[in-house]
Image (cartoon, rainbow, N blue to C red; front, side, top):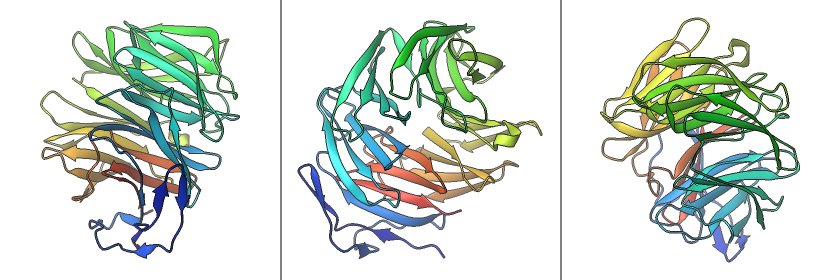
Length: 362
């Protein structure tokens, strides 16, 4: 049976959490739809009015990091345990970019990608998130969303970035260091947006090209001295804000979601059984997508025309079920993500003064 629990009384003092008994429901908690089974609300300090959020599974549980998307300042974050218990907060003074591409736990250490405009920075983060060491700065590059993908084994890792009309890929070692060897794939147009995700025995990526704007999906294989792009499919869509997720490993399938200049939200599921194309919303933006661990559906979060957060399930036949999340208000269009860890999948929202984790029912 679904339930909602709000940890509204869990506070944050300086760099440490103090724990008190959870308050079931919470007097000020917005309502949740039937798709949400558990809710954790954790107060945090210094949430900017406009934020960019990244969250990733790590060996200890989860790590969430955000930056001020309007003014340079230190990145901040929290660490959560596997059951979403609060492990601590942190500040990364050396990370002052306005955007976060993604965070990935590559083994010994996590890797963090950030950017301001077309200058992309890559960091190796300490295990306890007390420090981030810069390892590479790339100018005139397009930072990807989740730019350090792997496969189902979580062992090989690629760093994927865009520059001009090229997709460039590198190996990432388990200590977080990017190897100098690289592979270059030349696209049909200038790279405008890029997203990647873990695949079966390879990774899946999608990018948008300008001149005119069109989308391309591709596999990234871990062969040779550097990962390489192969098996590309270019599809005739005017896309931006692209995100992707892999479907069942056995099907080697991928879904891509994006927004259009007409402010619609679209989805294209590429599967061996036949492609499925659906419009998620006639007025919306900023989609996110993950595949559910149950192997039956994708979950797509997006903002409607009024800026309200919504959640849509997309099953493998393309059946859509939409849920309202009115009252759950992210600090900007980049301040929410969907994260999957083990058998859990959650919608994570950075809102005013708190980090909200909404666990999605299976």
